[in-house]
Image 1 (cartoon, rainbow, N blue to C red):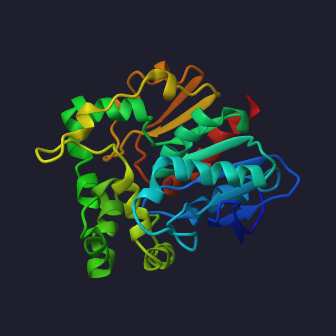
Image 2 (cartoon, rainbow, N blue to C red; image 1 turned 90 degrees about the horizontal axis):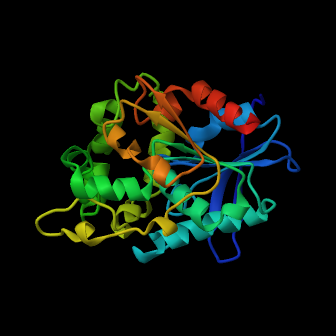
Length: 297
């Protein structure tokens, strides 16, 4: 284990700059970590220190987050652009990853990356992020997941920035304190300060992920998700994949694991009882342990 993490701004060939947290020897095999909403690259710091003695570890702030480029409009946050950012970043760090580790929205990017760029990674590690095919099925047919995902419609709204920023980000704090998790004992004042610093740099980019995605619960006014279909050939992941699933996640329910092996033939699933959506904060050493096992396989 090392005791520090550095920050570097990485300019990609297509004009996007990603602010990254980095650790480890520059000539070591590469691990990459993708964060979710409403987080940022700093959430991976403990894992970057854990693996930084043996691996080159890179945790980018995804486009729209923190000091990374935040293009105007919704279209730049479609999946193809997010995947292109990560593909370009991988190419700048040697062209192949020992593992891609991702949580929540970072996982949405990682699932797509693994399908489209399997030659660029040895294995995939997903932490509480639904595979697009099982998520689509649940949004179309599962009332419990539809209800759990209803917030996505709210976050697509034109006034979502105001809603999230009101009363010192009260809506966001509530997602940590019971909304999608539990008591959030890990949420110290220092961690709160890190989150505030990220959110003050802009909420529109993060919200545009929801606005750009076709995956959100059907409503009477917008049932468009019901017409979607993902052919298996376009969503099947062929690289070895470890899925770590916190079972007390209130936003992403265990039904999202049903039938996952159909789309991930080389799947290892590890359930984490008692853990919530914020398992990266809650159990970083358990996450590190499971990744170690996967890397040694």
